[in-house]
Length: 247
Image 1 (cartoon, one colour):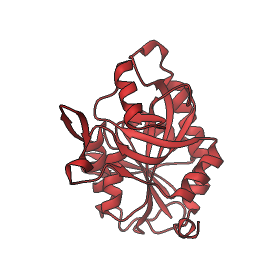
Image 2 (cartoon, rainbow, N blue to C red):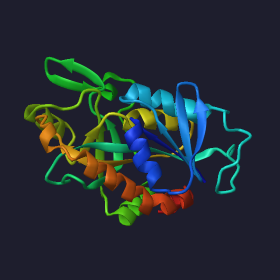
Image 3 (cartoon, rainbow, N blue to C red):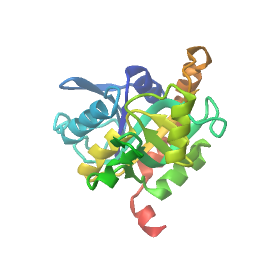
Image 4 (cartoon, rainbow, N blue to C red):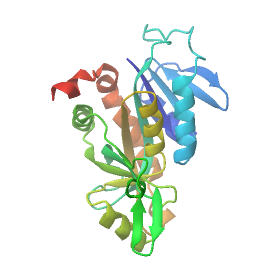
């Protein structure tokens, strides 16, 4: 099965591809470049949900690789069976400490909606759209078991949280949320419109709340992301959607 992995920036993309070892094939797309490692195509699509959605949608729809063959022997023109949003992110510590891994059991648009005199209303309360995607439960369990990741909701925000007050408000609106990032919901929208299941994997680089760059552990988080894909690759490549239908 072919897997499309979408990160925000090249340093995250490179952290993912390091997990696979071996040579990478580069496939040029307008405005982007796929790094192909066997059955995995890894793309740095840009920061934020809009860029992530556009990059993922274009990669899913593109025929640029139609006549090429992957290193695994599977035809590169075979459709993607899974899309993964991956990268580093902020976590609601101490539940998920720095350097730990999170696999989303819910991908939530935390700031898509409207402000009112009575508070924030999600887009669903306005009567249109959706504000949550649910990755395949069996796949979430399998990846969490393989990597030691915590499983829980990951919030997608367009503005990174920078205060304790905002962090508290997010947790009040989304109890049990483990982390926030900026791309997951956009990738999920693109995957859903293509009829492809989605997953989100995050390595924790910082705490959600007041911005303290000195406390961030980006290098540790990137190393954790590499380790996660090294352990999860067989699960992702071999996953069959019928597993979720069966339980």
